[in-house]
Image (cartoon, rainbow, N blue to C red):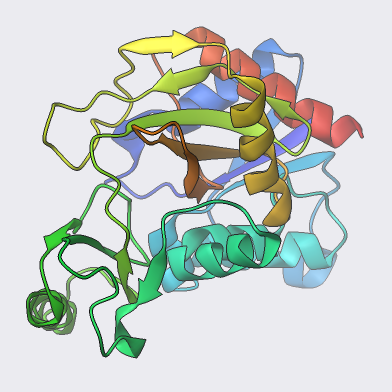
Length: 283
């Protein structure tokens, strides 16, 4: 099977090792892998080559700027090439406000989410709420705020930073604060799910610690079903999703990532995502 890995070659991203990990995992499963970072000029004459699967590892920052990786993904999809995650799924999972709207339409349980621009009364009286940007990695620019004045002051600082050249945040989102939950990362397709990786988080902290997983277990049926629905409703083929497990046992859809990070030091994670990706292509 011939696979195109579409991923930026920007110097700041290379050290993550994701491109190498994806390539290694796919090749171990017998795929022939090409790598591309931008739409070649020759495609305007000859069109894109034939690939059995395109893995579009298109980052949120690139979506916000319609960067070369997204341009190439759009050209490949329009030319009839099979993308692991269609362009619509890349866009929907890149903007947390869009993601929340899609999941709300599907009736998936999630923390109550509001666009700050449309809020004129504090949605959760007497309690703090989470303020987070619709764009950006889920661990950046996120914090607790106590009222509208504080939320709008934080957003004003975001906009000032954007104007000075900082990264774009998109809409400012106010979200229900689920206190002291377990945050579980799963890799999922609409019909399959990986092991459940519980993210590390120190007591009292809001943000988890990336790809540090102090506990790994089989996903219970309800969690697996939710993870698969999170991907399916966004039109995705394979995504990394985060599920919150509240202290009262509620399962809540938190976030979905089409260009997802996995633990590059854990070969089994790489094997699972590679097998799942190639299985989707075979369908």
